[in-house]
Amino acid sequence: MLPSKTERTQSRTVRNRVIRNTMRSLSRWRELMIMDESAKEPGTIIRISTARFAVVVFVIAGLLTLYIGHVYTTQDLLNELQEVRRANLRLHLQHNRLRGEYDAATGPSVIYRRAADLDLETGFTYGETIRTKAQSPTFSADS
Image (tube, rainbow, N blue to C red; front, top):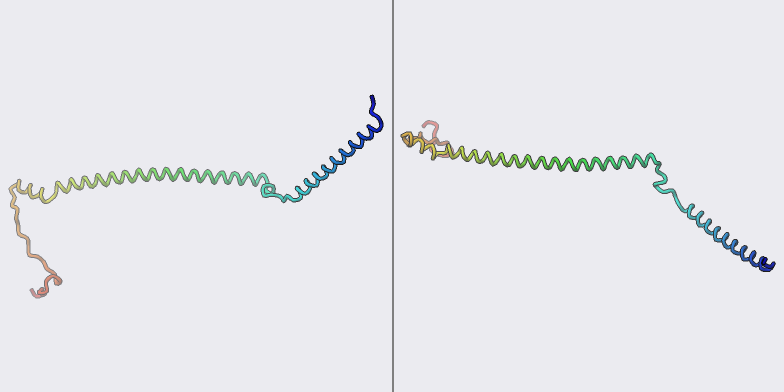
């Protein structure tokens, strides 16, 4: 069964209407695309060439690597400095201990005791006190 002539005309009319509406909407989309493309200005990324971008990426990676290496080197240097400070403190403490032992072995009380053990006399006379002009006002060049 074939459609009648009126049905074919109606279907053509409907089909034509759908096509016109579709074309109108497509033309609107084209207008939007054209407006969107014309509104865009070339961005920074578009203006940079691939080679320049690669160079910038490598430079940033190099700087980051240098910074990280600097941080690790500084930490190693700090650890070494702390070890040297500990060794210096240990040596100062050892020096103070040895100095104390030496002072204890050569102090006046030890010397007097050893002198007494050797039957040495403990007293002797000192010479006269030397005075300067500032200490005694009676000092004269003649005397």
